[in-house]
Length: 438
Ligand SMILES: NC(=O)c1ccc[n+]([C@@H]2O[C@H](COP(=O)([O-])OP(=O)(O)OC[C@H]3O[C@@H](n4cnc5c(N)ncnc54)[C@H](O)[C@@H]3O)[C@@H](O)[C@H]2O)c1
Image (cartoon, rainbow, N blue to C red; front, side, top):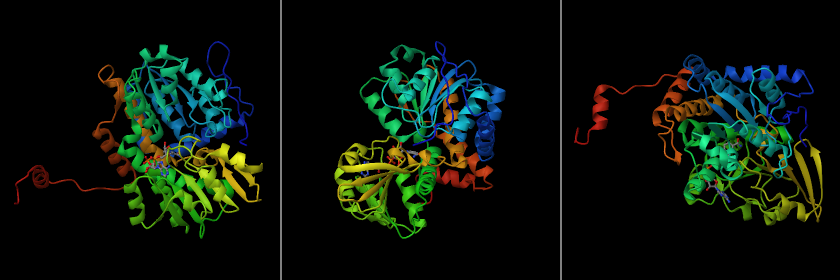
């Protein structure tokens, strides 16, 4: 299990974090870690500088439910620099970096409700209380990674909805939930699909999740991937990034998909494509990245080889049917910090990583700062866009304007030292015409 090195204490009636951190050195470690990430976030730094001057979020209260990492710390500092009052809680019980939470609360003045390993079952859990604590601040803007805040506002805290002018969503699974809310006509305020911006999913999901999921599996197990058979469920943005990197490390990669287009893409990218039913007997290492439920089910676990390692990097811990696995196991024990061994009745052992929660954040540090620079630049600009368009956006899930995407991409390229060509006047005219040159 995860160690609990820090506790954020929610005081009785009011919901200010008092920073009841047991280890004072945590704050210093957190500051250094946040500054280290900031070095690699030049686009966000540029936005922060402008926000400090222009104060576009002044007078707005924001509730943010995100993975509490050093990159997120730089995002919330940017929002605060723009004048917002920011309150932060964790979007996953295992993804919090306690030193970062300590630094945010004690140094940067951002009340942070997050403890690595916090309990998360039901409404009495710490995770749920932390969601409630940021909502008690009566936010005008919410920012989610998985749509938990919006879900609570629309179900348990309906009185808060009228106060919310807009919400930003970071991940694929959150967007899927929000579109379902829109379809069921329960949404009460506009939502901006930050994940759908090209500068987010094309880079964060593919390169960020791809690399950090490999990192998480390796840190948890120290397994050598070269020569192993790695089974990837889901060949979307995240799955593609993970499969490509596993292949690059010398693994034989099998892809499982349900979408024929994505499956054929995997075939043409050179991967072996088959069903999970079949792949279950072949894999040494499994990883799900689908956003779907019970992608690896009990009968798949039953077929696995002795010693199989199973992880998930999709948003929720529902991709692996761990209740089913527990039922067919005769015993289970923790063998390393993020590795649980399940022994089946015939003696075969299956190793599950990070309780089936997104492994890149459970046992590693999540996405590198350089890629979160783009995602969080989009988040900061989406917040400004929501404020500028207060009362003008209808109640549905919105795409961000293309210009915001283009601006982030252009600045990122410049900060990486790359130059690109620009269209000549002749080329612009040619591209806009339908009969020139025929
Ligand atoms: N770990 C992280 O840090 C991180 C980062 C970004 C996104 N995510 C999450 O990862 C998940 C995937 O995101 P994405 O952007 O790649 O989504 P995506 O929609 O691009 O890809 C998901 C793929 O999974 C496939 N799929 C669905 N059910 C399946 C099943 N039963 N078996 C096999 N394939 C199946 C879909 O057809 C699709 O191609 C989401 O839950 C998302 O929120 C995690």
